[in-house]
Length: 220
Image (cartoon, rainbow, N blue to C red):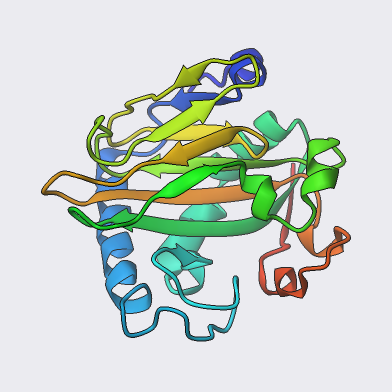
């Protein structure tokens, strides 16, 4: 597994192959679909939840709280090593992991944003006072019609990568991106592993619910 940190810094994202076998990706997909059914359904939407963001929504944040297998993978040596290389630190902090399942024709999109925009302190992140990365487990082949992710680089480039199931699409927390509607007849599933180079709970913020996210430290 070759991690091209120079390419990551230049483009704000990279794709990695051969991190886990396809059977593991398929297992994560099955778990993700089940979590969507249980914790991102119409009955729960908008009601209070015990950790992560304050209310239930169409995705599932802090997903590994519901699955020991997801937690095992989120905290695995492979994933935390990748995070340490791309965050350029020997100390990695867990932050959040998130299931996003777009059902066929579901009205579920993400407008242009950067992940740190919704973090504890966007201004500090943009000033590089701390860093985050998102490691996206691609659980279905991306296509132009099933709600792929489009990146908007600060140099003006607009790129919509179409990775295959079984790969990791990883981006910087300050990289602007969006995600369109799934207009196909099949679900499009991803699982996002988000890591930081600092304890998120110690970042100054006016959003107290960040105390409900992970801050576990992993050192190398």
